[in-house]
Amino acid sequence: MKRFLARSGRPLWLDVTVVLLFKAALLWGAWYLWFSHPLAPHMRAPVAAVEDHLLGQPVPAAKPEASR
Image (tube, rainbow, N blue to C red; front, side):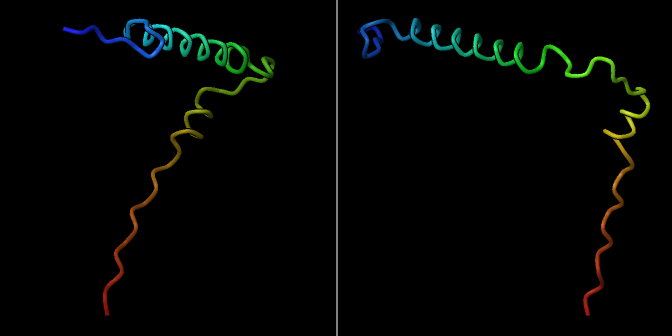
């Protein structure tokens, strides 16, 4: 049975592993650059206010209009 080789001559599993490691490194770098430190650490919001803002009041269901 012929082994799966990429065009580079390396085994396919090695190419996939290298690509996944590269993507993981890029994701970690993006997290570190943009999400690891808050922009304004002195600004705090009460948890209840954040919950109300994110969850809010449920939107009332639209009433079906009667057909004429």
